[in-house]
Image (cartoon, helix red, strand yellow):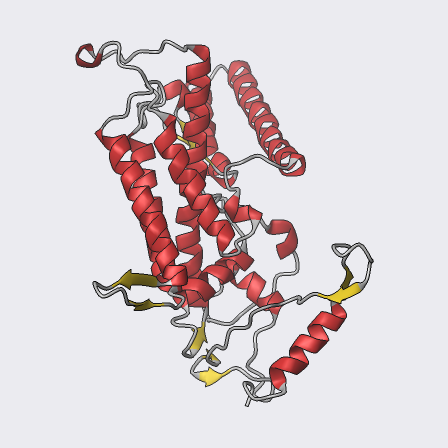
Length: 361
């Protein structure tokens, strides 16, 4: 019954009246008020189900937007949805429930032509996939920034391997060519997933499918994220690779996300484009550094006064481990102790990660 006249016409009329779709057009030079559609296209979808039953007001099994936006951060085990009043202040690249929902709608809810079942498990699955996407954008952008800094500091940087002496960082190797080709193919497959594929027969006629395949789109983007992460993690920061293939991969990924409507929290992950966000992150980090310094000073002074330097040294090492294992990961930073990670010296062995909860004491 929802698809019968005048349901859509009524919805369109209400929406366009509310959003003042009547706008002034000056193209004809006369300043006449002309009609402009607010929503030019509508999609007919199947019914939405919750726990095996169609969602409806009469059954009182509907999920509000406020509840939906809080579900991705819900740690309850009973499967019930809990609201989160502060979700607007919690949005970030790593935590954006509205984008988790967009991903679910696009690729995890099944074909838009059939029914969809909404559940916490499916939203959690969407969050895991989106976290991988964000991880690729974060680490890819960080790698590009590091390479750019290294090249600026030494324009004539050469590889130290004797077999590759005097090899410019602008020269593409097998890995770069493979990444570039795979990104190009992924971009074509993403387009086909959104608009379909058309082939021309020998007699000049055409055939193909023209429909939205969100599941294939999400699958292809996830495959691209895996390829990009493997390339980044195999790269050496102190021996920069050519930046063009990775930059092409990151920019292609961002364009695809923007095309299907993800917010800037996801699309611009890894790009510091807001002073407010940077100031907030820096303030949190400085607070933790100040607290860490205070704890180190207190422990050291106590050890000196008590002349029990061995116990003090163990406690200092424990505080350092807590900083590495608990405090910094909660701020989205990982340290790698006592070894080289991904070609980075131990004094620069850090990388971004998904912020995680502090370990209860």
